[in-house]
Length: 220
Image (cartoon, rainbow, N blue to C red; front, side):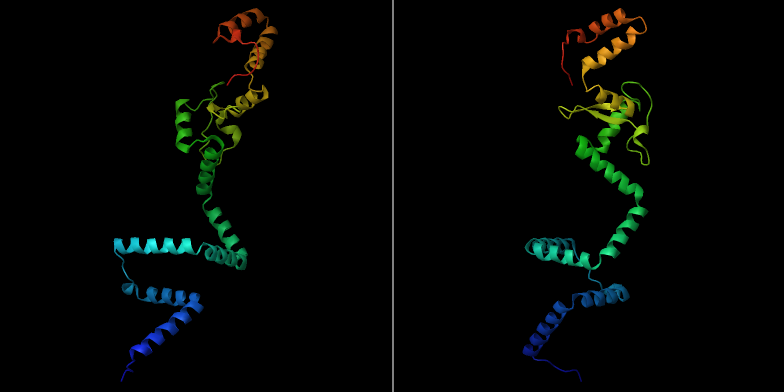
């Protein structure tokens, strides 16, 4: 015959079980996992309202126990550092393309304030061509491409404003000319000088966007 417990005995039994569970959390979780794996039909199915209440309680508990959670994570990592490092390395190796896309998105946002969609729109608007030399290049969003193969993002170093997409050579050239319009125009005159077209070059420069009025300094 089954033993009949008084209410006081039931309360003491529940209290003892709670203390044991608090002292052995891993064993409790493992036992629960094994039980529900063997008896999936007994798993509790929560309603949407119950899920929301459970989520709210979890958020409150996490907020109250921030330090405890952080200390637990730190201790677990210290005890399982090699295993966790190996797992992360294996996951990255198995998901190279995914990580490359995520890293690209972070760099676009942090360096230029652009989204992948914003870059794609610029690339399409330019027809995949460098704005200056019109050489076709691949999109920076394609994985496995080097800097020399893609259209780089050109921006003004004074205002940080994105100007357009250039091949790596043209992008580097603007930087080497210190983003100075007069330096670029003088380079044109220099090249024309040695082809006997210096006068024509000077006349052409004066007619382009009023550049003949510039007397010094850079303009972005």
